[in-house]
Amino acid sequence: MARQIDYYFSIQSPWAYIGHALFEDLARSHQLKVNYKPVLLVDLFSETGGLPLGKRHPARQRYRLMEMQRWRDKRGLNFHIRPKHWPFDVKLADGTVIAAMEAGHNPEPFLRRAFAGVWEKEENLADAATLTRLADEVGLPGTQLVERAATDAVAALYEQNRQDAIAADVFGSPAWVLDGEIFWGQDRIELLADALKADRKAYTADV
Image (cartoon, rainbow, N blue to C red):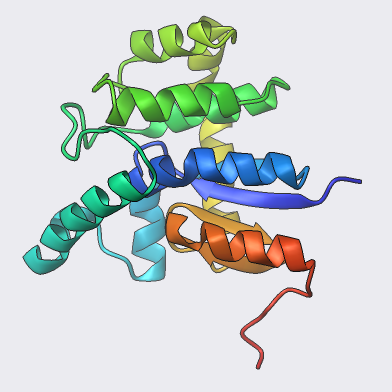
């Protein structure tokens, strides 16, 4: 049986975008079953003590911009630090990922295209027509998924992801939970790789 990992993220998160391809390569190399769990970050932050970007001290906001440039270089990416349509209402985009999984599709091609849409192509992912087109481009039934993403049923699954994140002590995006051990931030992917390579027992806070 494939080893499972929970992947908490939001399409709106620059750090999820920056680390996504590297994580997916790691997941494939270790044949992990990835449980994609989009989560509404503003609600997660309010529960776990984080602050949305606009409420953080200006020094933290400036440092974030420098870090994005550093990691853009480090990961060999080419993206806009301040994309045209960001921030945006991400619920429909994240919900499309949930709808894809609910229908039995692998959401990863859509997710990769969606991240690029926000950060590289400056597309408006709050727009249903844009999301439909992006899903269609990767071979998914865009109209069906985007319509489903707007339903109360998908909203309930979205909220359940938030509850699951809180129960797992997840507080930001991206975060991976492997056997109960949390790896938060795209700069922890190398540590996740080390844990998988060592095949060690999960670390906990009970030390």
